[in-house]
Image 1: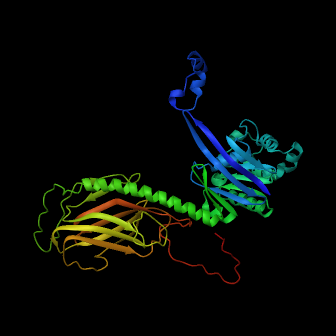
Image 2 (image 1 turned 120 degrees about the vertical axis):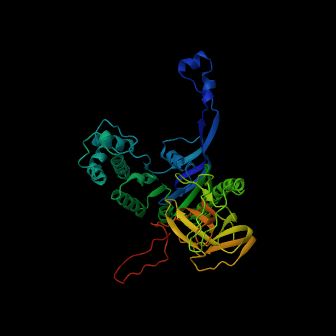
Image 3 (image 1 turned 180 degrees about the vertical axis):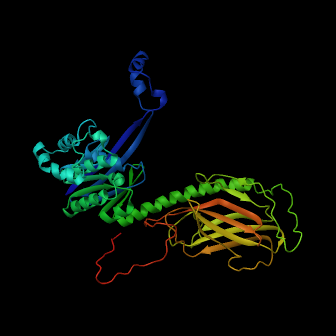
Length: 456
């Protein structure tokens, strides 16, 4: 038996363009085009022909990017919105943790709002009276319950709204990212309450961007994209498919960015018109490089600019990032291999050269840097075209965007060709690490410590 059933449900919104707007109702009538002005310029399908079933006592998750239709489905199941077509069936009392506190009246007290919201959720006045102390105690608002709600913080709003909705004791609970504004002490209480609902075999329809929580608490998950269901299956399989799709989209975005950078680099590939470097006067004095105007191309992040400098006696013509299988990639997972491959060219034979790379996180912190001189390679000679590759066996970095510097220079530091922040890649991970790197590790516990690993 199904607690929630959606049968070919669609929800269409009307989008109006500026040419259909009018300043006043009177102006529309005077123009004789009231209904013409109201005719939509475009129809937007928030939910498009969705069918799904949630069994009694099941915790069912909805995942997908913003705008995929998740919240719209919850609002239709809750009765807040009506489907444009199709049928929705819900069996049992419903409580919705959606936009908590949205129905509160700001001028009246928290006590009065508890009664009003409780009645709206289907409780009688006597039932609310019996549950009132429990509601206030759970929300931790004993000192403020007689104060006007307009004096509450957003967190107090959320706590009171959650407490009212959860104490209705519904058969069907709808949850939509409502814990994002909760404080560190209150969120665990909310999760414990949700776990209690699961233990009592209540039906839960759960929307969240926290994929690890979805995979942990849900018995089945649906992935939505552009208002359509892409997949319904057990959590791990659906989450993995969704993450793969996200990675492919990120890969395409990085590829587009790279193509834009390539155009900028190609446009600037001619040697800079700068005076020649004067030779050193003696063996004891190192050669001092003449400054070269910085080459600016496309900004890659707020406050960051791509730069290139050097006279390019040895030039880095192309940089490619590859995974452990040799495929060109811009999105990696922790533990993947990374190869930084450089195509280089020397116009004249050179004997003094060093190749180097540097990885920086989005805050500009150097994560790792090395070069052939540090690793005690001795340059002998090079001319013409060549290829240099630095292979990192395991990319043990936490989730985030990283920027790459590559360079070829002399042993004294004089730059032949330096590329700063011109290449970037993403490490995509569901693991909640902190810091910079993910260090290989393992936990050990003595026999007296009872602890289990959560299934994911």
